Length: 336
Image (cartoon, rainbow, N blue to C red; front, side, top):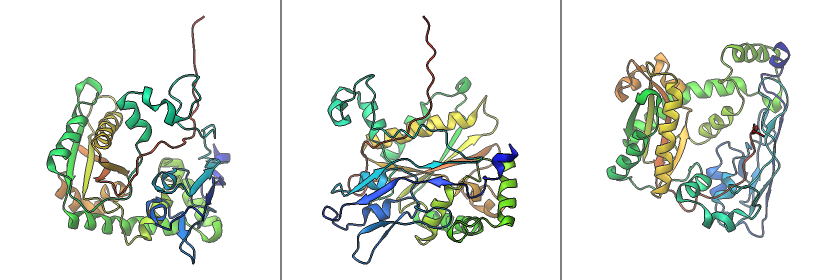
């Protein structure tokens, strides 16, 4: 355990290779705007180029959103993202593949899609949307996605969820601004010039990772950097945000039940032509005493606790698309 803590702070990372075909690129900026990590910037001619900072030599987590939103097919990615050593060492197989739902069928996804159900198509093509139109979502559609969440399974039919729908742009901006005060401090404390690992930072963040292992992974720092570089915008200009809370007295595992309900909501939204993006950045600050007034305003009181939030709205242009994903380990245990 203590050996892994040596690399808990600013661990070694390997990044995918991003290439831009300038003959195809129309310099529309969609890839730069949609990148969740501030991993693409524009060169002097207006073409997107990979960008890195701190320990992120090339701030790309291999989400493929830049490829999905590119209207001309100018962007390509090769390889996987991986943390190679230490506490946060990756467990994926580094085997990037397009969806292959039909066992043994290696046809391109576009050829086999017609054989899939409508539910499968939404699952395989849903992308996190970070390009929203300035158009309000009708209350009727928001109700439909919330109904989909209501019919998710839960332990003991407990339904330990609460949803708060916010369509007030001022309140969304206020939450973003005050959450960023906390996030900016943490991000600036974590990042070090050219990936250096000062001993005092190594000690602080390694010790913190021992008691809060899910909080000190380096990857969320990239989302904080993007928000900091975007004038504190965390919800990507979405016209609506749905805050999701769990009942801490829920049966068995309310986090799991809340996650299943939220995914129902997201899939229904994309099936209806909307776009969504899970946003967890604001949740930690909102749960601090510092932002207690916002919790009161949102009606998040005992026994409820915020879990996540969803930016939701109409996508600006084509967003959803089948992309490559890395592969988690799968074990088959079959009878003779």
